[in-house]
Length: 117
Image (cartoon, rainbow, N blue to C red; front, side):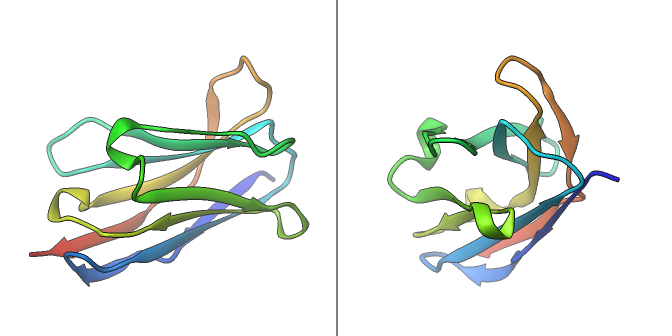
């Protein structure tokens, strides 16, 4: 059974930091990504990382504040979020792609991040 389990969300103040974790099990992935969905808005891409090689790519709003990383030994992907803003408030989802060209077919249950002003 394939599982992606996120953790690390919470309620923080503007300017604080949070680190989200996503533990993957049940299969290997080519790429792992983080997405978010704010109330009343569509889900949006945040960042992604290749398991092999570790190359990363970020949404414009995430550049300079968020860092995606992975620990191959722990099958875990992280999203370090610094200088959080109220507009970062959302449910954050971890997702996995089986191959380079496939869709993100595997999703976690999400973890809530709330940033107060």
